[in-house]
Length: 120
Image: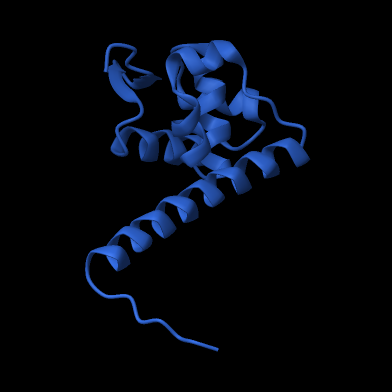
């Protein structure tokens, strides 16, 4: 059995191909998991956040993002009512999505409203 040692440019090309395949495999795994659990991504939601963005999010953040996309603009309490999770949990998830740049946050009096910036 012959062992060939690849050096230089061919090795770099193969490594880039491997990285791309690994990324594709990760995304396919997410899509398979979504199908296993019977979740579907609503076409209206993908107008606001693209499919790859939603697929790249962990499940707990995806649920929050999808819910907010359906509602439009909402407080953490309004999102929590839809997801059946605690308001404090949703507040944390919404703030994470703001930090990640997927959502915007606007204070009006004592309430914070979250929304997807469609122009971004």
